[in-house]
Length: 282
Image (cartoon, rainbow, N blue to C red; front, side, top):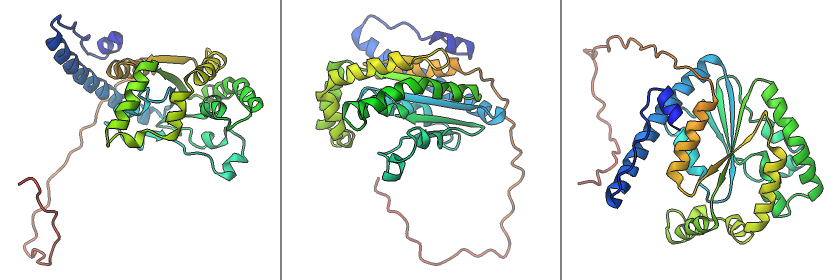
């Protein structure tokens, strides 16, 4: 993490104070400062991607409640959705079920000047599809054999492919699930599939262990992101993304706004009724 901050003109994260209260405040302050700086670098990355015509794919997989959504939000909240496209596909339609498995993912791969982030990806087959019985074991094994070859073709075409797997402990996952149950604004995050993943922790552990082992390759390695501490995970992962792409800062060409036109002498204010949203802050 320090390397990206130093090479891009950032200061390393300061050490925390020993006092508990001060340490908590300092940690929060440091996170806000670091994430803001990294988001500036993501903006520079965006400018380079657009100008160079680069194509980037970032895959996020991991345990339920490991923080994939929050990670993707911090990556994309300060950049253009036309450059950073987030793909979170729903369950396949009947037509898609009849297609080659990879087909619907291929349709979303980036064109020149795009970064595509997969919030879940083709690895559904080796995770939830396998554990929940949505795919036969024969198809899962065939996928595990073919996935590295599929990714090799992506990389050989000139696409930068990064794969991240977010981990979370049993205790922390349960804490987050219970928080979702108790918090009305988080209850929508707790799906029946999440409950199944909680109950079948070890089934998912076996599935993910084999997935990671069989699909880790030199051209597309898996990068594990420990995520019991969400803030630390975000700083570490975004820093790694920036380190992994050899982008350059593109000089911003400041536009000349010119002069605003003067109000026409014959302009008359429209006197028709307008419905104005009431001010609820008074």
